[in-house]
Image (cartoon, rainbow, N blue to C red; front, side, top):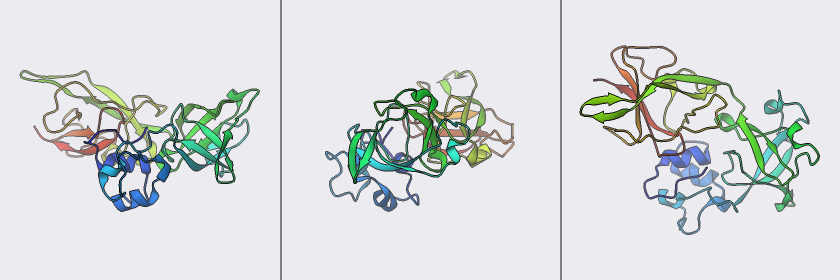
Length: 257
């Protein structure tokens, strides 16, 4: 999933898709794929709004590296990259439905064929860091069965306000994130939250009440553990999402009531 096609997206949205060397706009332009820009909006590629709808063009094809280890699923994520291919969408974000093409001397060739006789046996990996995923590829070059290469950690007891007068809350639920982040207090802008332990279903926005920012969530108060954002025993963890669909945190902090 790419940068939202809206006028209200943030730098955090862009960073989550591009995965630049450092978290600033200049590096986003340096590390972005020119084929993934929407030419309606990219203009001179010097302002944030040039990234509008970046990476959502199914026809955009970006040269990437993927790894394959035959039929062995358990260690495909640790294999060195051994295939240079073209993929649709953003270079470092893998999701079901991405399409892969062979690298034909620097341009996209025919669809990449995973295992034409039994694709369910063959596994690949791609992406880097927190975005590294393992997946399978069908004979038409379509990616499926995407899952994270990392294990998960749990962000517990999360809810949101459903009404301010009277003050009411949604039922508390757990969400999940990449274990490489460590304690929940390390969660910050650009990190993603998921609703499943496979880290494939991105948290989406709620339809409740957000007092301070859009899509604001809270954890229960007066509880401190590695599964809580706030390390102050007098506060409650809180975070907001950058938009309704990408599970990207825009900020996290302690809230005091």
